[in-house]
Structures are given as C-alpha cells and as structure tokens.
Image (cartoon, rainbow, N blue to C red; front, side, top):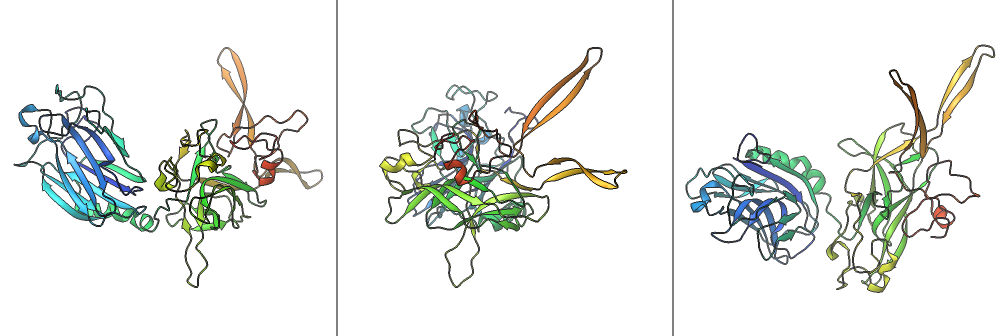
Length: 473
C-alpha cells in the first residue's frame, strides 16, 4: 500500500466492503470480519486503516462497527485518529443465521447497510470532504505507530499496535468478501444482497452438524470424501468425515452445477460410524458417515456432492437441509473444551477422529477446505477396429470405469542431442490419497479405493488415521 490513488493496492480515496457472515458465539467483542488496522485506542496514539467488526452482547443486542482513519481527522499529525459509525441490532443477531453487511466511505460520509437496507449514515469528519484513507504503511510514518508489516485480515482483527487485546476473532462463517475501490449505489447494495440471499437465508448453519472436505495435504489429515468419482453402474461406498447426529437420516446428494443446483442422483440412507455418547441425555455424536453411490444414467457430467439431512417424517412435505462444510474450532459449533459445555464427555474424546492425544485440543490440518466438491460418475470405455477379412469389429483397447492411477509415456526431442523418454504416473480422482504398500503375498490393487466398510475392517490398502493398514478398524 502506498499513498498514490492510482498505484495503491488498497483503495485510498473511497472504499466499500461487502461480506456475508454467521456468528457462533453470543458473547464477542469487536470480532473482526475484514480489517487492515492499527488501533491504539485513544487520542494521540496511532490509529490507521479501517475495520469492520461486530460485538455480541449475550443475545440482547449486537453492535456493528465500521471504523476508518482519514486525513481530516489526523489532528496535528498525531498518527491518525479514526472515526466510526455504529449500528445496534436489538435483540441481537441469531446464531447460525446468515447476514449481509456493506460498509463504505465515500470521501465524506460513512454508511452501513444490513441485508440490503441502509441502517446508518454519519459524516466522516467535522467538515467534509475528509480526504484520503490513512493506512498503516510506510508512506505515512509516525513514531507512535507500530513499525512493520500490517496484514489485511478476514475473520480476525490483527492489531499490531501495542494494546491489551491485539486479536479479536470472529467465530462463525464468512462468505463472498468484496473490497471495492469506490463507494456503491443503493441499487448496487441491493444487487450484492439479492445475489446470494435466496440461497444463504434459506441455509442456516446447523452448528452441531457439519461435514469436512479434506484433500489430505497433511499426512495425518482426513481425505473426505474418500473419493471424487464412482462407477455409474456399480455402487461403491464413500466415506465422509465431520460431525453427525446419530438417529438423524443423511444422504449423499449429487447436484447439477447449474444455478438451481438441481438434484440429479441420491444415495440410499447413509450409515453412521465411530459414534460416542454425548453429554446431553440420549444423544450420540458420530464423526464418520458412509454412503453408497447410486447407479447413474445421466451421461458424463460434472456434478457437485453434498450431504443432505432429511427432515423428520411429518404430514407436511419438507425439503432436505444441506449441511455446511466447516472445521469446528469452538465449543459453540460442537467442539468441546475443558469446560465440557457441549458435546462429548471428556473420557470419550479419544474415540473421535478430531482430537489430539491430550484430548483437549482439536486437529487442525492443512488441506481442509470449504469449497465446492466436484464428483463424477464414470463408465467403461473401449476402442474397436473394423477387420476387413472377417467383416467384424475387434476390440483394440479398453479403459475401466474408474482407475486410481494411469501411466503415461512421452518423448521429448532435444535438437542435436537425441530423444528423452519419460514415464509419469498420474493419480486420478482420489485427491492424491496416500496408498499403503500391499503385503508381499497380496496382488497390488487393480482399481481405485472403493472404501467399503468391509474393506476397512478386513485388509484396507488405504491409510487413514484410526484405521491400520492390513488390520482391523
């Protein structure tokens, strides 16, 4: 970031920030949504950049705050003096529900919009216009300010200025963050809200039930789902990690990638495994789900996989609720800390996948994502030739419906030095999953992992934490 309006990586003269979020905690203080900030907290101390935060006050109220440091408030070159706009929601926001905020500075005024409607406006300085935004960067040096790099953050306020509370964490979910290099029109705010409101407002986050997408970058991390393809004609079993409620009916849904996310295929009811008794009476919580892929006759098409929670049977027809992908880091979304405020008795934690050996801290792995999960149904392919002599079609080659690896040979010609031949092996469709070496007497696997429950309990050739290679589950 520098002081030039044309060259700065972040907006200098005007800015608008748009974000969708949910909250998981009833009590927070200045939880950071999006920010780039130094905030000493008082007059004469360093205060630079901008921050969009919220504070939950036990459910009674929620305050939304948009704070920006601008030139007109840099009194006597004190190092920046931020001014804020605050809006209070009473009663407070609902946990797990999606909200959309737009906050802007247009050079003279601060404005805030909640769910498409303007809720607050305030002059950014005593006598507008108020000048450029002052960022915590070297172009605006002040002795009172932290000297060093200051990050732009999403989901936390990382305040490097000496303070009693340098980090203010958001606990919940965030989607569709936009930083716009100008102020926005009310019609544009309406568009930003309506673009996702239909989906998100109808998809509240069930904090105690979720699934995890893991690509296995960490050697100990889960690969979830265990495969991203299946044979269209031969059902196979897919394993998914997460947190699921025993007694609830789940299915794997395979959706079109169109805007409507049309349901094209569904598994039968899923099977839950690795369950322990919850602290609430009569509850059991599970970290593993197995679903069997359906036969699929829709032709070659890229689909998306989702986990659907079926409603309890009633006289009124209800639509399934899709679980969100997430990684839980707080007791309020199902993680249990020493206080045992929710979820699983302390002594039973070791049975679950997500706990470290000390039973108090969670596993936070590389490769865990919250992204669309592509899935493909495959069919066998073959190449034939017409034989003139017999007037018949003869098979030339065939490719099975699903194959874990394929060897490819290529030749490069170096001018004046001859040819170089190299064979490479490509992993297909299993997120580069770790493969255990088969026993000497066992034939190497000829097909990709089907990941049936029987395979895990018998002689699995795939490594996964909690399942020993060649042993029982």
